[in-house]
Length: 155
Image 1 (cartoon, rainbow, N blue to C red):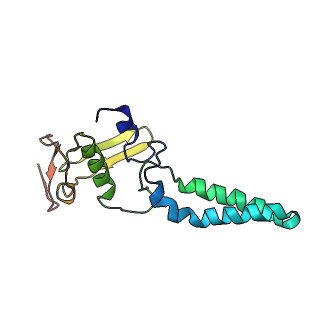
Image 2 (image 1 turned 90 degrees about the vertical axis):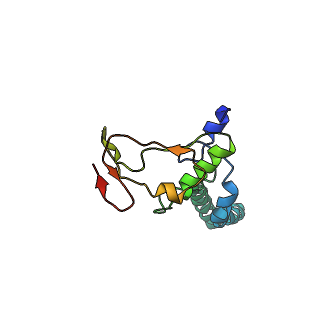
Image 3 (image 1 turned 120 degrees about the vertical axis):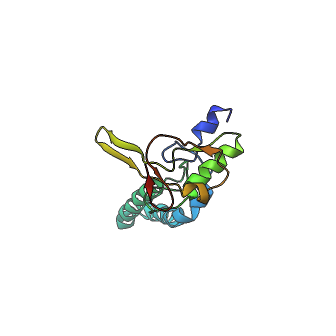
């Protein structure tokens, strides 16, 4: 990854404006785009229809903005466990640009503690090594208790 744009466009949450995944999100906002078109038609009529059209237009624009069609990743934090797909997307993106990706101590508990008002707790996740592909490597030999896929932690 040689260019600053490579880092600016990483497919991670809240990484700025990116139109690469907009085409994937278009079907989800078609309803709002069509209601926006209807609202413009209603605004031209005047009277009660104008006020209704303005309300529909404001709501349509708000819903389109809320869907965030220019987000940097097609995934979000609101749709439950999305499995390995968001991470695999990042690994593939970095590989396409000649970068390196490493899993951080997948067999140990890492990042346990408090960061201000936020409690951080990253449980062992060794399954990522089997469920993902194309990564460069993983960090190991940390000196913590190692936990493997069986759920047993070895000290």
